[in-house]
Each structure stands twice: as structure tokens, then as C-alpha cells.
Image 1 (tube, rainbow, N blue to C red):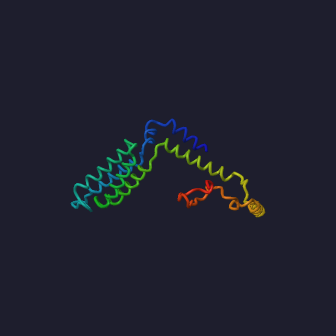
Image 2 (cartoon, rainbow, N blue to C red; image 1 turned 90 degrees about the vertical axis):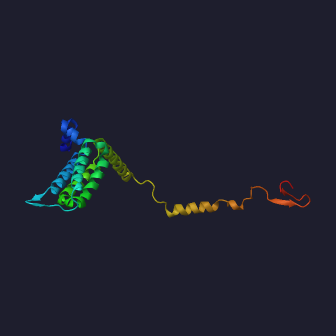
Image 3 (spheres, rainbow, N blue to C red; image 1 turned 90 degrees about the horizontal axis):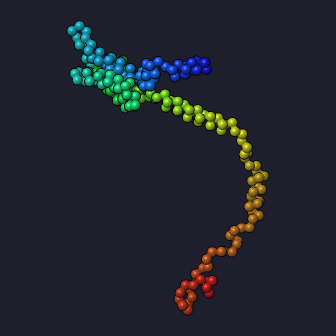
Length: 199
């Protein structure tokens, strides 16, 4: 409990960079930027006179890493659009598996996938507090439902039989005279339909 209170007190005051970092998907954006760098470096790998290049060479080896770095930076700088940037960075990171040296020898692709997922899953502090409050309210309501005593027990057999006997004792409704409109009959003399009440 004490640690949570200390954390809350430091979170509210916060330093300039700490408050700025908590207001955006910083870790996810940073991992996405690192994935772009790892993929770019894997496409520039030389062993003496041998250049290592797996996959499609050329344009994609430059565009995919630059795209990942750009998407990571945009996710950090414009957190309002974090879902869009996270989904795009996830798709580009997965495509880098085919496009650039097995996605930077799989390391760059994994960094990009984790970064994209973290960017998509990020939530502002106000929304997190609101969601936590709603969850607490649901939990409290369910606890109250569980703790309420059960006043209404199942009806006993005697009560059910008593209700059945009471229903049988009441006069039957179909035995009562019919109170609806009188049936129509034809008057042979006038050959027009009349009611019994008029006849």
C-alpha cells in the first residue's frame, strides 16, 4: 500500500520528461524505431568482400526501415493516432520478414511487432483511471449482489397446492353467459341481416 502511495505522489508531481513520456506510447514507439534501425543495419551487412542480402534487394531495404523509424517517431509525437501508427508498424514489421533480410534476421521484425502491439495497446492515464473505476464499480456491484440475503425461498408444495385449490374454487369464466355482440340471423321477409337484439 505504501509503495502505491509513493508512486502516485511521484506520478502526479513528475519531472518534465517523465510526465511527457507517460502521456504517450513511448516504449512502443522506441521499440519500433529500434526495429527500423536493426532492419536497416542488417541490409548493410558486409563480411569482407561479401555482402549479405536475403530477400528482395534495393528499394525495400531502404523504405521499410525508414517507414518503421517514421511510424515509431509519429506514434511518440502524435499519441492521438496511436492505433493507426501501431497497426501500420505491425504490418510493415511482418512484411519485413519477406522484404529485408528475414526482417533484420528476425530480431528487427520481433522488435517491430512488439513495438506495434505496445503502441496499439497504449491508453492515456485518464482513460486508464476511468476504465479502472468502471471495473471497480462492476466488481462492487457483483459483491453486493453476492452478499444480499435471499429473502425469497422457493415456494413449498403446500403453498402450491393451496393456490391450485383456490383456483379450482373460483367460478369458471366459460360457464358465464356470453356478453359479446348478438349473432346475426337473416330475416326472410326483408332478406336483410338483423341482429337478435333487433328482432
